[in-house]
Amino acid sequence: MSRSFDVIVVGNGVLANATARALTLQESGLRVAVVGPGARPRAATVAAGAMLGCFGEVTTTLLKTDIGRTKVDLAYQATRLWPDWVEGLNAGLAPEDRVSIRKGTYVINNNMSGVIEDANYAAIRQTLAKYEEPYEEVDPGRIPGLDPADDCRPQRALFIPNEGTVDSGALLRAYTASAQRDERITLVDDTVTALKLEGSALVGVTTASGATLSAGKVVLAAGVDTQAVLDQHPDLARRIPRVFPGGGCSIVLESEVAAPAGVIRTPNRAFACGLHAVHRGDKRVYVGATNHVVSRPFEKPVANNVLFLLECALDQLNRAYAYHSTQMVAMHAGNRPVPIDGCPIIGDTSLQGLFIVTGTYRDGLHLSPLIAQDLARRMFGKPVRHERLFQLFKPERRPLAMRTREEAVEDAVLHYAAVGYEHGMNIPRVGWHRTFARMYRNVANSIYDALESEHVMPPEFLPMIDNDREKWIPFFREYLRGLTQA
Image (cartoon, rainbow, N blue to C red; front, side):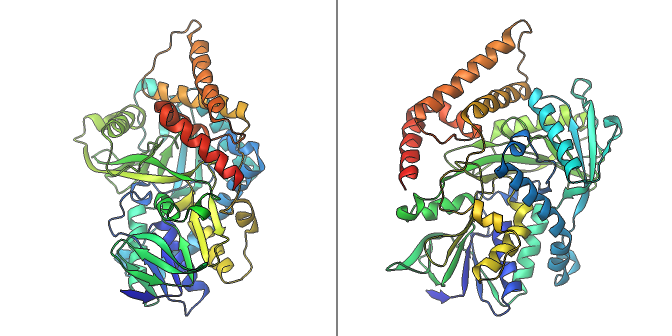
């Protein structure tokens, strides 16, 4: 079977669907195929809390470099695009298919993960002030839906009225309904396995079902599955930072306990985006999320991750979940696309007609209206609004540097400590905190020494490497050498 289109979008998560929609808005006569398995295994979106979080995601690391500050600024610009983007998406949909933004985010500082949480809380306040974004300090004891155990009470909290959430499942359903109503968009329930080339020219893609789909332009926007396609074309892949799965789990609880009005979250901590509770209905709350850089994508919820989230929900969010006939009505697993430098991979490549949108880690859904609209303009030679997006995060590049080695080691120590504290680690007070820090500082330094590379990989990769050094030290040492040569 062979079918022809103007553009093929590989992937069917939020970024892929947003790109398809932006393309049809940009070029009215365009025929676009969106190719991805209907069940969306391994996708990040299906497990996402979908927080529209610019300020809630700010960390001290982001504020230290021009790269990090650019990421913050792009997130701020994306926040301002969401109302019009949702209004436009809803315009052609039946009432039952429409999606809405629920505004209001509480950031709590409960110090359940050590000092890294305090530092990132301060960074959030600093950035709110810089952008003159409205916020207020609030009494943590008066946050609706928050009633933690006595020893998990937050001491500080702030409310950001313009930062909120969408329901990720509802958003995907809205995109699907919109595409089904648009004769220019074709949804293909299949998996792209490789690009199709004729000589050095891109002419389309091949799929797992044996189909060939033809197009002069292809957008790889399949999250972690983008890497599998690139691996079929090693000459290109070796010039692009490799993407790994950031596997995570989330749960949905149903209870008589009042759900949060919007979002309740901690600052980022413990190699992850912190604990968060998100409104999913008057009696339902989403609790997320865990994060582990892994070699293989999470296919199903992981038992110890689910247990951890339940413990966090009962201890840090609302102890009433323990005795109000609370039921766990859903468990999800998903995979964030994490490049080896932790930065997005956005834009055109040396293979004419090929564009890549991946590596957005925790920010893909939030950034999707901005990335999609600017990419659509760039693909057809129109001026873009955020040129820095394509200059800084172009696919074929040396890995970007977000930290010095010394900074990465100290960040790793703080994250390791945060993981321990979140899991109930109790360090004896006399001297042992220094012993703990020294131990993990030695772990981090020994890994960076063994890699023998000028590139400083993000601390999130260290636990995976440390768990199997025999496999990962040679792999990354060889990979980083090859990437530098490329």
